[in-house]
Image (tube, rainbow, N blue to C red; front, side, top):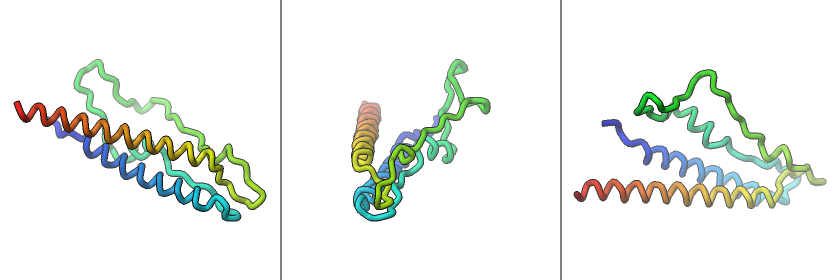
Length: 126
């Protein structure tokens, strides 16, 4: 039986969300700092690709990553921000949207772990 990696994956995403929330909070805190450059972290998908965790193909019809698969990259939101007169690149609206994304992703992560944990407990009890 293969080990279940859902909890490890959820833990890594929670750590990534914590780092991203700290970076976004730092951007908001420095919104009035002259010459401050807004920061963001790399997407979780690219972090996941670098960890070496692979999806298991349990059936021959399942898709697996192929070396010739197209690499999709997201354009940074920082590129769309105009530099203010003070030299600052923080856009409060975008930072607040990021905090909403982080909250939604964390709630989804926690909900999945809770549901999976409940499912495991139901199988053990019977």
